[in-house]
Length: 430
Image 1 (spheres, helix red, strand yellow):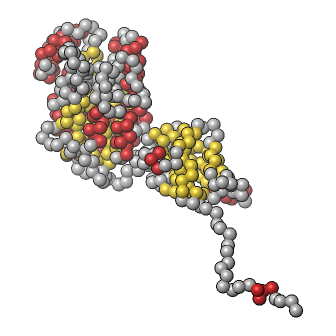
Image 2 (image 1 turned 180 degrees about the horizontal axis):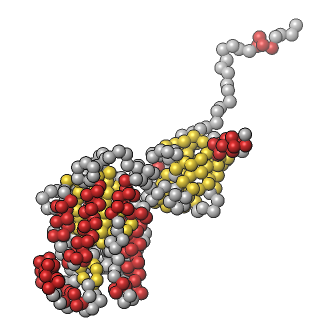
């Protein structure tokens, strides 16, 4: 007698089911969102997935982190321009290792450890948050005044005599002896510095409307002392960093009426020589990073000047720096970005009368400074020169930003998933 096959099955034996495939996620900023998050992606039957990511404003690459089963298996950077949409092909190999293709875009593959992750983006403003603003002033900023105006002061210059007479005697003698074509300190030229101050104060006034005035901090920078044995008056700086005003700790921001700010910038910042072309800009940015920024405020740093700081990845041309430096402008800018600080720059362009007479090596130094100021700005729309600075244009860029703000490699913004694209195409065909 044949037994029933079903009678031989043990009803208490556990039934095993095939293991479900591990979830694959890609960390991106969802379309319409502002914070990065892991998004599940579903490859097709061949294990491929087609994605479209957009490079954030301020960023120069899209950072990718692919996880399989919750474990990071791929970390890479795809070079792109801000606002550029990049098509990516992601394939999961049989061993579970993702393979990435980005067409003609350059890909840099990184170690998978979290330390190699990108800077977090600065989310767009919401509502009417108050502003915290730090002004970083180059006290060695220079601008041309022809020799006749520098040496001969007629009745037309009488109203500026009080400011000029405040300059130390050795500095005044150096100015009086300056030959035609040499530049003098911008801060000792009230007619030019005053116009810049007026524009900056107007920006601060607008940022404080509606509502209370901005909280402010002002940091002026000169340079570190030169090597021992250098005593020339035009090389020895009078100060390294100067925090204004003096009646509060250096790390605090405080409410300051626009009228008081105008008086402070016009009268309390003294000019100082720089020991060489590179000055203490990096030190000033590091000091700004130590400010007590508000938890619920929008944060802005405005840099005004023409002196570059030390940059390890973008060194100054030969002859521009004679000192060993402790800070790096790009590292300091990254630290400020991590603290949600937006950077705006106002570069003081040398007058045409000066640039026309420069040697090739001198022109290279000027180009280096101009390029550094553009690079430090969070977005190109916030990189101005003092000649073309438009407070209203800056205000529009700051207030009307709707996208997260990146810096360097940053998370990409998901534009369209392959499955959504197929669904859209099918709907159109119907």
